[in-house]
Image (cartoon, rainbow, N blue to C red; front, top):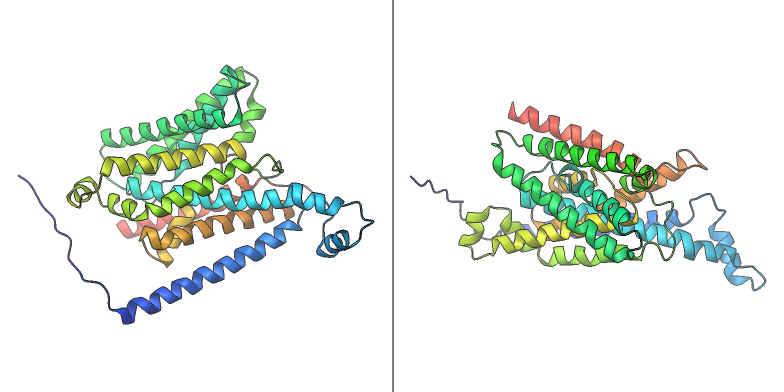
Length: 349
């Protein structure tokens, strides 16, 4: 017996109601962009090195200056700020895509084994081919991340899901197993220190010439925005997507490739930033809604801003020492994740 469910058909909302809403969303996005831009300017002048706006202006206008302030700005501070914005935006978008494709609000690359698989890929290529160029290492890490994500989806198909909370629990357990295997191999091969760099997000080592691969994530974020409508339809399920003429499997593959590549590039460049892709899309969904094309700019901006704020906190909370941004985001993300779980549990009860 076949049971068919039909979604209610609704026409477009009147222009009198959609126009103010669009203007309000545009203003909110503009305010957010200004705030993030201001935080970016602050980030340029926060650090152990003595760099102030007055000192920078003096270095530019004084021909006898040795140019040390300008060199610090261009070699260290600007690359670090740009890397923070790119990584934050891309990881948040990857988390949003993962949630849509899995149809679960409690998943993101660091809770389904994707980032752990990418770290295992980097460790593997470091052991087998340490002289491989960095882009090739990134490609291997992306393949491992894709395989780990596919394994997670295969497990979901085999396990009866009685609650939406089971999905992130399965992902966290899978990630724990992969992480344990990676740690064991690193321990036996004296690579624990290198593994620690990949497993903890940290921007302190970002310099000019060591972050440019993150621009790949900007291109992937743009691809995700262009395919936003496809992801929205795919999130309604395979049967519904097929009835609308959408290539469901092709869209799923595109989404998984974007998530895997973003995870690999970020892990290779700055390390794992946990829970970011879970917190930002959920908060944006509560404020703006679930339409991917409309929420994608908010998610990217929110991810960039949150990582930038956490990086500033990590640089100042124990000045002149630094707390890795992965630790700060992990603590904040874990608290928000627990709140979302309890909030969902109370509604289910």
